[in-house]
Image: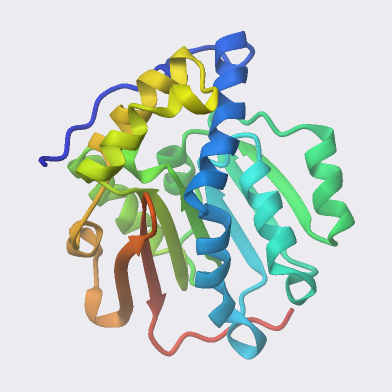
Length: 237
């Protein structure tokens, strides 16, 4: 199945549009069905202790619900983390920010296109970068540019994306049966067709000799990419 990147309706709707609000609610449900929080938490578990970085940046953070659930899953060992949530249309409520505060996370939002943020932010190997259901929005050329900027700004990068497969496409066409609205019913198969399989992200990752890279199926519908800089160290919390 060839990779095809097409516009998704949610990206084109005003953030306060009722269909957009409902679709973001659907995404929370789909994250749960895909087990995305569990998969990313497991990927970050190797950063416990001396290897852990205390600055975490999520690209395309949306309403912040995914990162808040991830913070809860990670538990006390990640107390004190400074989180930056980057999105061109952030919809992070005061309640979500209070949730981070209750976990002793310092959460800050940045309203900016991710590529613009990457251009403005200084390179430096001092953060964990995350992307959840985000990279598949980019065509190969833009994705290569984005990964290059991510590589220059992190010691550890985790991306959880749709797995491009017949199985995933079949499920994506059935999301209406779990209550997803018209926007989500359109966007779900579009996302799968734009997703990844094999070693497609690894092949685009720059300076591969400096990194330990893995790219695997995150059962049942996810595609998990992990890149860790070799011989990286963590700043003192």
